Image (cartoon, rainbow, N blue to C red; front, side, top):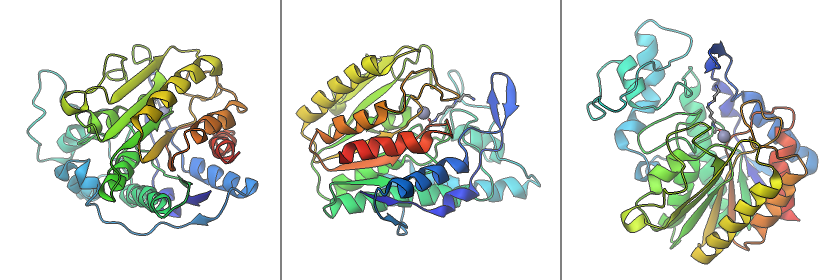
Length: 342
Ligand code: Q9C
Ligand code: ZN
C-alpha cells in the first residue's frame, strides 16, 4: 500500500503540556512521524509520495468557516503582542459562560476555538496542520482512483478537533475531511472506524446529526479517561443521524481479547451499514507501554487489527492519529498495515 507523507509536519511541536500537575514537553513529537515513515520504508510497505496542495473547501463542510479562518492567523496575532514561545489558551467558555461571542484578542480567541491546552501553536504549526490535511486528501484520492487501501501519515492528528475547536493535539479533523471528500466524489455512505485509545470526540460531534457518515469509536471509558466529557455508550446520534454513532467505551486495563470483541462487533455493524469506503482513524496509543494510556495491547496484536479491517473487503483509508510510545510506534502502526496486506 502507498503512503502519503509530508516533511512539513516538522515545523510543528507542542513545546509544553500540563501533565499530572507538571509542565512537561508535549508527547505529540515530530519524531513520531519520522519513526513511522522509517518503518514504512524498512518493511517495504510501498511507495511514499508527497501530497498535492488542496484548498479548504472540503474542510469548510466539516469545520466552521470562522474557525478555519482563525487557524492560519494565530502565530501572527501572537507575535504581534510581542510574544514568543507557544501560543496557548488559558480560559474556556464552559457552562454558564458565553460560547457564542468571539472575543477580539488572541488570548480570548484561543480559548474560544479550543477545549483544552493540548493544541498549542508555534511558527510552523499552521503549515504543518495544512500539510496534514493535504496528506489525508491526497491519500483519499489514491483510494478513490482504485487503490484498495492507502496510508495517510498525518501529523498533527485530527480526531479531537470538532467543527469549531482544536484540542488534544488536533486542529483540522483529517479523517472527517477525507470522509466528506469521498461523499463529494460520489460515495453514498462512508464509515469511520476510530481505533485510537482516546474517544474521537471531534469526529463524533461533526457527524452526529448525519446518516451519510457512520462513526464507530473504540476507546477508554470517558468516566476514567480524556476527553472525559464525550464518548459514552448512550451517544447514538440525533435527528437524521440517530443510530449512526456507536461508542465502545472500555475500562482501563483492557487487553486485546476484550478490545477485539468490541472491534468484531463494530466491524459487523459497519459491514451492515454497507459503506462505499472506510476511513480508519489509526491510533496506536492502546499499546501497553504508551506513556499516557492505560490499555494492554502488545505489538503482536496490531497486525490482527489490520486483518479484521481487511476482512471487511472495502476500500480503506488509514489516517494516522495518536500513539506516544515512540520506541514502538512504527512497529505498531505499520503492523496494522502489514496485517491488512496479509
Ligand atoms: N498530559 C490523540 O491521541 N491529554 N490525542 C494528555 C496528559 C491529551 C491525545 C494528558 C491526550 C490527547 C490524538
Ligand atoms: Zn489518542
